[in-house]
Image 1 (tube, helix red, strand yellow):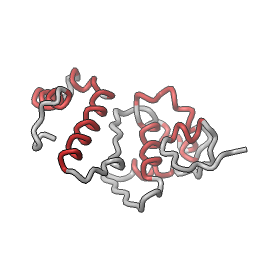
Image 2 (cartoon, helix red, strand yellow):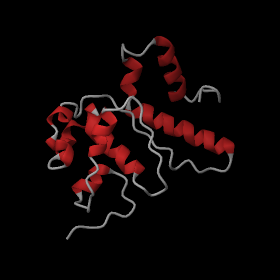
Image 3 (spheres, one colour):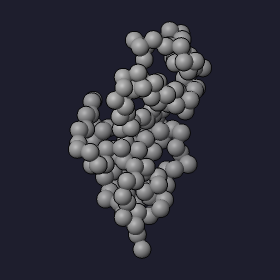
Image 4 (spheres, one colour):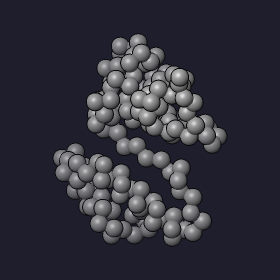
Length: 150
């Protein structure tokens, strides 16, 4: 018997554990056909789950998880499927940024940025990232940033 997904925000967890899932993979086509996309929805409306789905579809680091889309609507679109797991993707959410103290908020944001950098550490060695940007990234990793840098 399938489970009802309450509070599940990870697309892989949703599919692997066979939760009920309303196929929203048409969103992938929407994203591909737009220059800029802004999705605003009320709380608990699936924004993080949809971002997770986009990450698993587009990220070149998630090739082992390509099976997640088998049988879903997007798998029927051969043109879109050519883009699966082809791009570097940075996925981050600010949903847990709820500190009332500005200093704590800045520290939590720095921690979030550092976590994203750790997952994408290859940026520090990439020839596609210029020297100045690399220095800024290194200062973030080393916790040597000003409020403006942050």
